[in-house]
Image (tube, rainbow over the protein chains, first blue to last red):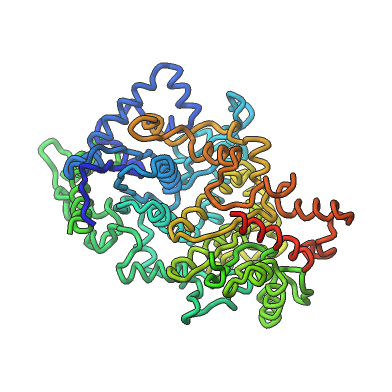
Amino acid sequence: MKINYSEYTLISFGDSYTFGQDVIDGEYIDPMTIKTSSAHHRLKANGLDGVIEMWKSECNEKAYTQIIADAFGFKNNLNFGVPGSSNERSLNLLDSFLRQNPTLKIFVLFNFTAASRHLNILKLQKEQIYDRMPYDIVDVNMTTLTSREAHFQNGDRYVGINKRSIENLFTYFRNEEQETYQHIKDRRALYNILSAYDVPHASFDILNGEDARILNVPPMHRINSNDGLGIETLYNNDESYVFTEMELFESYTKELIDNSPLLSHIGIDHLAGAANINLFLEELEPNKDDGKVIYRGDGTKESDYLRYRSEYGMHWSIEGHKEAAKLIEKFIKNKYDT
Amino acid sequence: MDFSEYTLVSFGDSFTFGQDTVKRKADTYKPHIDHENNIWWKAQCNEKSYTKLIADRMGFKNSLNFGVPAGSNERSLLLLETFLRTNPTLKIFVLFNFTSSSRYLSIFKLDHEPMYDIVEMAPTATYWIEPGRYSGIDTKSIANHYTYFRNSVHEMYNHIKERRSLYYMLSAHNVPHASFDILNDMDYHILRDNPMQYIHDNDGFGVDDLYSNDEYTLTKMDYFNSYYEELKNDSMLLSHLGVNYVDGGRNLMDYMAILATSQGYDYNHYSDPVGHHWTHEGHIEIAKLIEKYINEN
């Protein structure tokens, strides 16, 4: 499939890396503290909404989506990267966009973030309710949720939600096998949405490391078989139909081993064996100490000055985004221009 | 459509399975106890269920019943996804019964082994989860989970996700289908209460800058609002036998109760007095309704 990119809008989904967080100094804005709509509304009421708009615009402008759009000559681009967000959030936004624009020519970039993140609708404590709306949509992530706001930890904000309940959630209910399962479901969901609209795309993992984990220990080595009561009587593999045991897990593992993903996905084989693009860039990093600490004249360490890591936070610098864009561009060219 | 070229493939819960159309000795919720009896029981129940009745009456080539007692929509969607992916050229017609939105699949760690089980979850899951079997899972943790994390509004969100998920799977494979709600009553509640009015809008940090109705369209909280509009306007993306078809009831369970009383019987005339699922006679009535819907659509 040869694409005339100038007819297409590049639409990009993902987390803070997609957003371009930390490419500029955003010290005055912490999305983690204003992600909840109540905080956002307060900022709007104080006339600070324009500051957020400007920050988003400046971050997006220097992020890999814009670099790729310029390199290929896309008609334009839209950046749906959301700091702290989940794959679930990205899939919902993609679903809304495709359903509302079924005939628009688009090319989708989809960055899978950490599988542990998910959306939850939580009930506000009575004293936190405003506009008579008692529920918030929250991006739940064990580390950010417990560290970013004290009132999450001590249960002041949401009914029944505190440090302990969140730890129990991630230890027992959303344990690591549940996350692997969720990861496979997210991949399949993206494939079905894009297939339904026949949309060209490239997906990749910036923070997500589930594929490497699955390749290391296949899920079926850890999960007892159970397709549902009586379903084993429907297992079959002849001309009438095919249905095999625990196929969701088996087929996904096989796709990874055979390097035959259903999605147009930048997998581990494109990342010199790294589990995701973030780790790939770490390996590429030219300013590493390589085991020995090198001091500069001012006493700071050479490793404090990483080329691809931003000086403003934990995300990529502009150089990091350029390097990631190169990798994604190469993949798209191989997939769609040959 | 020439149904004789199509296999009817049916997904759902115990109602789809045909539970209680045939008596069973073993405990339904402890399937590992008597495997051979399960196989016999499944074959007998499936034979008397609405799927087989519809397949025979409409002349389908054959039928496959993927109904799972106590199964969730999530389970049904996984089984369907697998079936579609592994049989891309097979001519199939899908029946999809949405069960209660509170059910879902969870993978729990066995308490004394480095292994995990896939478990059908429901607020009453302790009925089939043996005490102490899974680390951190007990009556209290399940109650907390359903009270705080999977609260009623979150379930409404999951309901919409599952509807959309089914739509995309079927659209990706261009499969004819009919979906319906036997136990699920979420559409009725959404129409009655419009729960979206109780949720603060939040499409993600900064996404409000992308709302547009110009070169492209993106509106606020479309994921929720579009579903509500579809219900109000009776314009579902799925071929769905919705609340407009059930004579004022919330779902097909209600429809059967209304039908029974309109015929001069007790409201539970079509239900088994012990197991509370439909009798074979009940399945015959529901098959008629679904068949009518398929023919009309």
